[in-house]
Image (cartoon, rainbow, N blue to C red; front, side, top):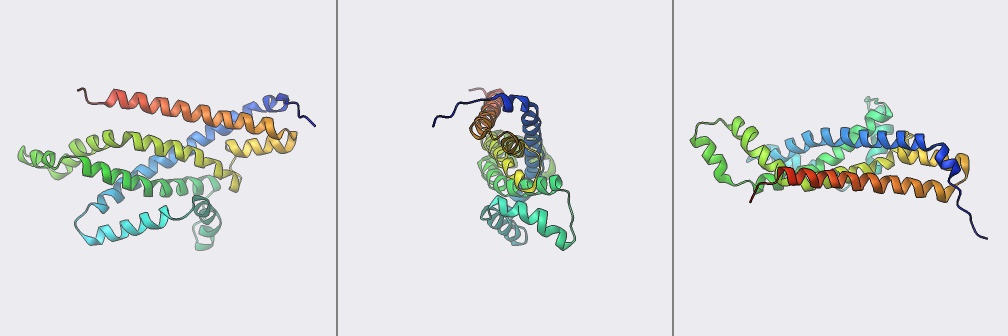
Length: 220
């Protein structure tokens, strides 16, 4: 038997999909913002001379990068309250995204720091800059410019990972799509539209990142 596509039920609830998409972007943005802070702290710890800083940083990166994000999401939402840390489902999900992205961004930032010429640090000292001034005004801007493509890829990947928030009933895009699917029984149509929304959003984000790369590129 053939199946005639009918998108009417999806269009009637399209506003719910857009609301879910907006929430997905918000979750990803909050996660990457906090993840950048975590990643920078861990990256500097990884490049520190003292083992006291390097070992915990390596342990964090190893554990988080080798644990499925869905397991981390379920742990944060169901297990942390048993340990005395009760968070709302949205806050627990953002925390998970931040910790997860922080582990990956730590390696990205570490590589970016390694790519900054050491001579710039010495030049900064020579003209009387303090360590904090050199780090904040010289090293960090250059490092962020170098890692922008990887940072953008991480954000797009994190946006797609927000679909896992449906596992704890956060009404992001995938959750709303499942709701429409259950209520309308239009399986094919619902997931076609949802896929197109994900693809279009990721393409738009990639275009914005490429634009930012061109704007920040050093003229040759």
